[in-house]
View (tube, rainbow, N blue to C red):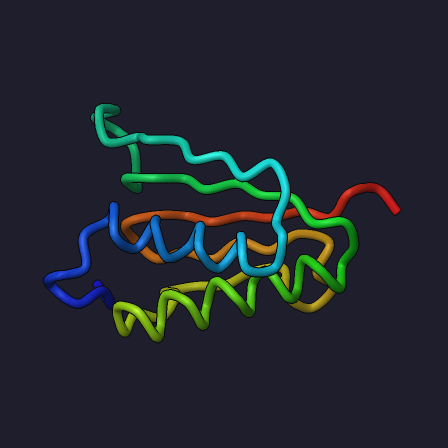
Length: 102
């Protein structure tokens, strides 16, 4: 896992949400999956942007917020090339964002 030992999934989730709020992400939803035995992550964070430009900015803001706050980088990122949607895998949480219909 890329997360520092003192960076709990709750803490990483907080900085993901901070990054989303910095760029005015909309409809931010946090799904707590810790009580689901077969879940592959602790949290799943979903947000919306108004355009592919904003979705790309949201992903960059999340990356910067988590990296600067807890020194973590996503294990895997998908969807950045067209930014209609982006998935960032921080192992302890998944963050996804999609653009509203343009």
